[in-house]
Image 1 (cartoon, each protein chain N blue to C red):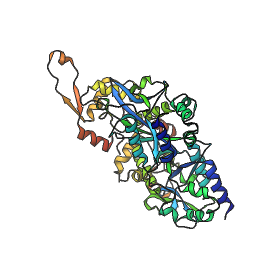
Image 2 (cartoon, each protein chain N blue to C red):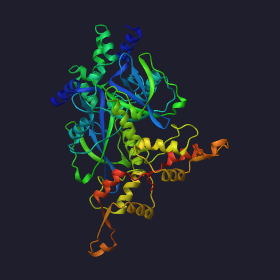
Image 3 (cartoon, one colour):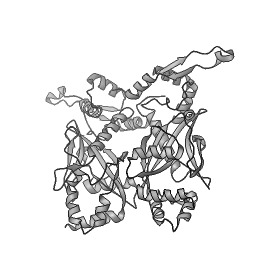
Image 4 (tube, rainbow over the protein chains, first blue to last red):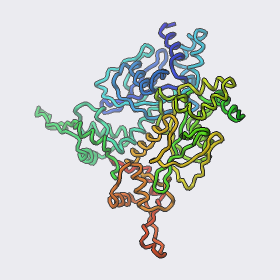
Length: 262
Length: 262
């Protein structure tokens, strides 16, 4: 058995809080599609969110950062806590998980680390964290125990472990609510983007088509865009305008909110 | 020692998830003030939120309902999960807790239930739930282990256990954000109320004074109020109009939101 695995299972039992885990939903936007960062288990064709456990000597927020970096290599990603999943059905040992690497781990360490078997098969409550990132600025990679680490389109998510699909749906619900009072986009879009890009992003979050001219009028009225001059090269006149965010005004709106004013 | 306490400590270790707790912030509005429901420990002058542990055989949401009813007698209160507090500084055995009943409990059971001492002194992560209720419709009472159960004004909160003050502040932050996209009031105000009552409620949540005529105009424009005729008895003509919520329209606004429209 892999020495790394033995070390990992020993450390987890000694150093981590029992029955509590963290799952990270990292959202990006590419080719006008919302995407989520997933890891593929070795051995089996099942995917999962980057997740892990909380060390006894660290804050839960710190744990989320460490887990994300450990499992995907992503650093300095601002994570937001959004929900804690506490259904009694949650267990690391449900049917799906038994089909995955965990089965191999459990079989291999059987008789070598019984404490870990007990630890990993207890009921888990997981706290979800999310981040919105610019896919172009990230270079995620799988950890030693995963096969692949990929951006998967939200409209075409592969089979996921446990309740990870539900966790992703909950983030999307959270973002839909956020759009009622906060602008979104600066961390998801490239530096320059078209109004169509922005509209596709909002439509993907709101899960409904928006009327183009109405959307553009309302967006531009918020006054936090810089419009760039078209470059006069060939067919460029027919190209749509490119915009970028006026960061200062964007942050003002984040501060004040764009929701109901009293 | 009280047999109830012995039973309680034995049950907790055997039947509850380790290191995880729940705290409930029950908010009401009375005499134009926001109030929170607090319990006072026996023996010491320290207060706390109604809280407790999650049984191994129940969902976390069920646990929150059970705990609230067990500790205050309140039933059928709709609880919303709002945040999970996972700082490593959180422990049932910090300085404040040692000054409370827990000290008495720990001293009394010392040697009788060492397992409970280990259990209760581990690091805890707590999930906060909140509810908005009509104080007039509730009749909370303390559990066997508490002295008193009282509505305390948010502007004058007594000394609280552990990080319970921080938990209350976090709910208020949550409600301030909610006001950007949701109406609030139907569960807090009596059936009939004045516009001043409503304004005081919103001012208490937003923590800032609002301009009266502007507030009334914007509120009435939302179109979810029923205005009642003044009763012509003596000085009643000078009395302000009474309003109630049009429940159907209120629920429509909850559904659609009152925030930014795309």
